[in-house]
Length: 112
Length: 494
Image 1 (cartoon, rainbow over the protein chains, first blue to last red):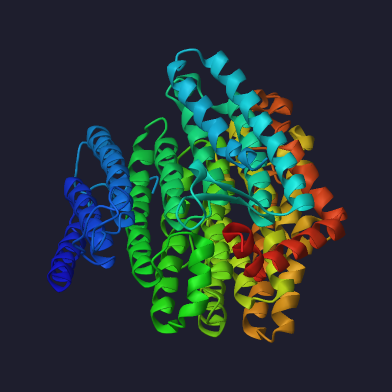
Image 2: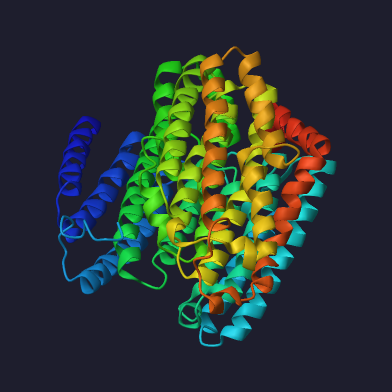
C-alpha cells in the first residue's frame, strides 16, 4: 500500500511541476493546490499506513493508530486552504490591474 | 512563571484581532497598536534579562508533557531574537504612523502588522518542528497581505512571485517534516535531537538536513534562492520594506541556526563545513555584486540584505564558538542597521519623491541631520570601527582564519570592501553633488521621521563602543546553542 501511495505522490508532484512551468496565472494557483495535496498524502504515508483502533478511547485493542500525522495533516490542510484563498484573490487582482493572466505578458514593463 | 513566555505570541494576536473590528478608526488603531508594541518591547527586555539570570524557561502548552505536547522554549538565543524583532517592529510601527497613507492605514494595516509579529515571535519561541511550520505560515500569510498592501500594479506582479516561492518552500517544509517524522517518530525538537544522536542514520539525516536547509534558505534569501527578494522588497512602502528587511530573512536564518546546532550536528564536515560555507560564500559575493550594479536606493539595500545574511550562515558554517558568537553578534548588528537604512530610504523619498539614486543629490546642504545619521548607519554597515559592524564581522572572519577556512574568509573581507563601495555610492549620489530637488522640497522638515530611527542609530553606536559586554553575551549564547544537551535536558526534564 505504501508503495502504491508513493507512486501516486510522485505522479502528483510531477503534474505540479508541469503546472508551475505554465504561463497562466490560474494554472500556477492550481499547481499550489495540487502540491499541497501531494504533500499531505506524503505526510500520512511516511508515518506508515496503519490499521488499528483509535488511541486513548479504549485500552483493549491489539494495535493503535498513530494520531499525530492526522493532526498534522489537518493543520496543514487548513493552512493551505487559507493560502489558496489569498492566492486566488491576488491573482484576480493582478488580472484586474494588468488586464492579462499571461505571466509572459506581465514581464518587460519599464519599472522592472 | 513559565506561563509568561506565551505572552509575546498572545498579546499581538488578541490586539490584532480586536483591531480588525476597529478598522475604520485609524487614530484608535494607531494608539492601541503603538502601545502594544511598546509593551511587547518592555516585556521582551524583561524576558531576556530573566532568562539570562534564571536559565531556560519552558512552557508545556495545555499541560501536555514534553515529547507529546507542544512546548514553548525561551532560551538565550530566542529571547535575544525576540528582543531584536520587537525593537525593529516598534521602530517601523512609529515610522509607519507618519508615512503610510491614510487609505492604506484603513485597509487592515495594523492588524496585519501585529499578526506578522505573532508569527515572528512564535517562530523564535517554539520548540516543536511542526509548530515552527505553523508560525512560519502565520508570518508568511500576514506578509503576503502586507507586501501587496495598497495593491499597485508593480506590487501585485512582483508579490505573486514572492508568494509562489514561499508556498513552494512551505510545501517542501512539510515534506521534510514527514521524512523526519518517519525516521525519529517525534516532532519535539529536543526529542528529535536526542533520537538523532542515538540513531546513527547519517545518510538519511543528511538528506533531511539539506531539505530543511533549502526551505530555510529560500526564506532567508540564500543563493540560488535569492532572486525573489530585491524585486518584491522594492514594491511596498519603506516602513513595510524595513520591517521585512529586518525580520523575515532573519527568521529563516534563526531557523537554520536552531536546526543546525540542535538537530543536525551529527556530521558537521559535510553539512556545516561543506554546504553551509560554500553557499554562504557564493551568496555573499553575488549579493554584493548585485548591490554595486543597482542604482535604486531600495534595490541596493535589498541586495545588501542578501550579502549580509550570508555572514551569519558563514559564522554558523565555521562552527567554532568564536565564529558562532560572531554570527549572533552579526544578527544583532544587522537587525538594527538594515531597517534603519531602509527607513532612511523612506525619508529621502519623502523629500525628493524618488528612490532613484541618479535623481537625488545635495541633501547634505538642506538636511544635515539626516545626512550625518545616515553616515553613521552606512559606515556601521560597511564595517568601520568603532561601530557595531566592525565588531560583528571581526570574530566571524577571525574564526574563519583560525579554523583554516582561508577562501571563505578572503571572500568575506572582499565583500566587506564591496559593501563599503556600495555605501559610498549611495552617500555620494544622494548627499553630495549638486542639489537636484526643488527649493520647496528642501523645506520639508523630516525631524519627526528621524525620531523612530534615532534609537536604532544610538544602538549601533552603543553596540560598537560597548562591544565587550555584547560580545560576552553572544559568546554565552554561542556556547549554549553549541551544547544542545542543556536545551534537551531543560525541555525533556531529565
